[in-house]
Image (tube, rainbow, N blue to C red):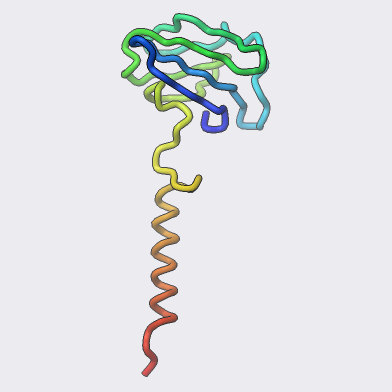
Length: 120
């Protein structure tokens, strides 16, 4: 989902998501697939799916949109979590996982310590 250029906004209590779904192989899911988009949470409904004719879709979700669900396209799970967070990868800084940033920072500190310590 992070590569699918997802944008979300809440409008009058509904969630409006626009995205251009892309597979893990880097291929876009073509037009006319709107009917293949579903969610697994029975408390969330898809009010409308608009095929923007450029490979992107605008989907309006209603119901308990603050609950977690799975977004499914053609039977394949593409996202799990709160729909308004789709496309956002938590724990990323400059495109890297936060644990890697901390590891790199620790490595830099160790290198600086070794370089700047006084030799006896």
